[in-house]
Image (cartoon, rainbow, N blue to C red; front, side, top):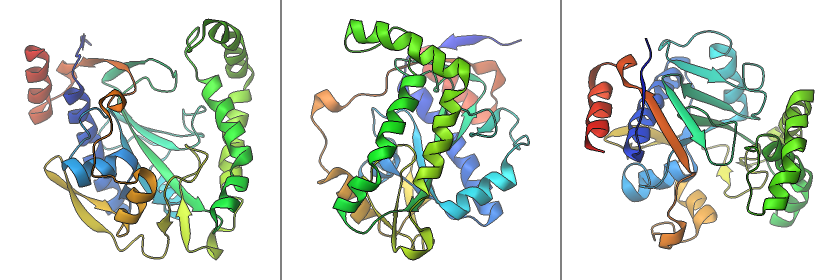
Length: 290
């Protein structure tokens, strides 16, 4: 019998995400697939040797062909840990142009998005990008419009910075979900992201989630990974991670202003009794100390 309790502490999400990351790492190693920590997760590994204190998820990169291989091997079948689930566009993830592994022993209420309802890690493919910044801006112009449509379709009813906008967008978002428009948009994002010939480029980028190129990665050296410390364990990272982080964050070793040190805005409930071992002990300790 499930017994969900609320835990208002990001360290609980960090503990569960770390276990999800360990599972993903083993899945990739078993399949002979190289990945990289990405985004804020990679920044956290370099600057904090773990999670950025206010972060609440994990981002990971795979080269497009390895991403497809990963889904082919592990998609549409139970994972070794029956409490974890791989979701993507063709497997219980119509709202996502990328893949996630989620923990079904958790419940999340997100302040802005219906697509986030369990503790998760994001698995993001890397696609070909034009060489110049100007060409990248033009290449992603249509992607940005599609991304806005995806975010709108996943928005929480009657939420938004302006009341009139929140009221207006709610019926539109419901209509997009009910009629399947959301899934059509997601499929278009996946298709548009792969339009630039992958085999002809030296550098790749993440397009499906951000709809813009924040940082570039060398495709030819990506699999020559290095290992970085993260939460007391070691995980794969692209060898040119310093260039990637500089392109994304500038002086990435410097903390941002306090007002920008904030999480997505989630409320976590956990079925602690469904866990066992060290992770259960951690969650019990966090719950009892809050």
